[in-house]
Image (cartoon, rainbow, N blue to C red; front, side, top):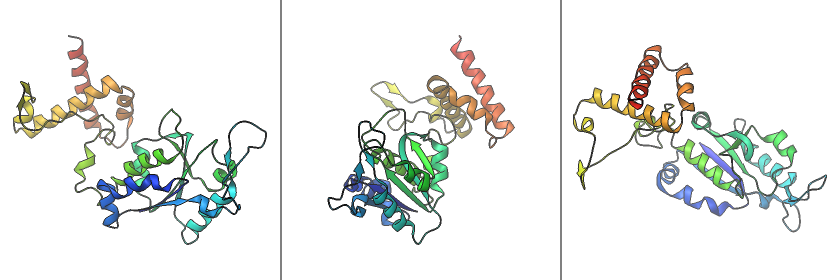
Amino acid sequence: MRIDVLTLFPDMFAGIMNESIIGRAQQNDILKINPINFRDYSKDKHRKVDDYPYGGGSGMVLMNQPIFDALEDITKDRNNYRVIYLTPKGKTFNQEMAKSLSKETHLIFICGHYEGLDQRIIDTWVTDEISIGDYVLTGGELPAMVIIDSIARLIPGVLNKNESFIDESFFNGLLEYPHYTRPADYKSLTVPEVLLSGNHKMIEKWRIKESIKLTIERRPDLINKLLERNDISYKKKEEFKKIIKEIIIENNT
């Protein structure tokens, strides 16, 4: 996958590009992240990229010319790409979006600043407006990094085993169950006995139950979404309902 990032601060991406899993994915040519300073495309003698908004108001708006020219240059030899604008006005990012974006071959992120982009950039180029939450940041760089990290690990070959993400929070619609490692007894704090039993069927049931318990406690909205999914079998949904009933009974006793 190729990821181009239009930003005024390309050096911010050095860490995410060169470290850990994403750094290894780039070394293995599975992923290519290319930060581009769109100020370099400005035709203004002072390399200006923003101007006052029509109609008045505070703040500045990013101009059409530098970003239009950058996008035309990036896409001149490509037909398949998605252009993502990071903005508080966008749809809230979630795991389903991550899975969808991870299947693309070319993504282009636009990191906004000031009061945002001239609307004509959005109308002409942007395919997705995305927010990472109901709060405001100084620019789109950090949201871009969050989304890149989230989707990169879903690309085949980036992680060593698919199991590394299949059981994680939100991948299957539930929050992730607790994890434990050696020693089994640390300062009188012990690991649940079922995890030491070697009974994989009982361990799987415990993990599902703990996931559902945490989800009910912290994100009850996800439970109904899980039961409404079409990609989960009737038998599995009935199993979930049974476990949910057990948890409700336990909580009421």
